[in-house]
Image 1 (tube, rainbow, N blue to C red):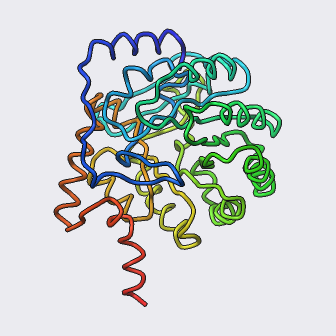
Image 2: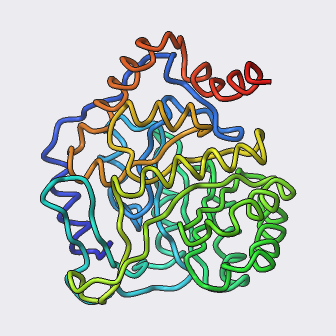
Length: 318
């Protein structure tokens, strides 16, 4: 997010009351070894440089993702960079991974007082850049986990992904997740094996690549409801291969009912961004309330029970 947009959002956030999170133990969950007060967090892309954490982290999310953070300063793509659909169900964006760079963002994170767990999303364009980024995030006590955004073509090949996973796992003991794009669908099972062998988790999915004249770059990514069924399908495919790896759901999750569906499909936690753009800062608290209502309707006493639904169904089927 460009600094001018980030500062405008920060001013807007300061004018809003804190929505707060629901203090309900039924919502607690675990991602890897990170305990989350609820399973709904802010996805990468909203606060790319950590400028908004102080105020936005009061909105009731279970975790907060900063990034994508890049090794060097990057400028945004030409305007317009964002298109919001009138029906409130999807968005297009083409920011181009703008970032202040790892040094200033690390300094900013180091000054934060963490209210909710912070996950750093990092994007490298080579193994050496990922090495720099992971080492920097590993040194910050405020960072609970690291998400690896493999948006560059280098990591479309399982061999490159394998090398990245092996490198990453040797640089930090913090939980690591590989964030995949829908274009990785063809190698999804390979990615799961790679993640499991190296002790990593997976986040699915990033935006759907599109070509469009609605954005200045002529291309971009679609987020929101059109991605939702792909996300659920990916969760099911991943859990067919591994019941153990930490698993994050992203893409089109707009309501608490959808959160529950993602948990039942195998997710440990979910990320939201388009929902926040259309529902506003109250989205996290509202989605938590909706999740509790949906859980009660199905007889779940906790998020943990909902997460175990799929494994219990498989046992019954066999």
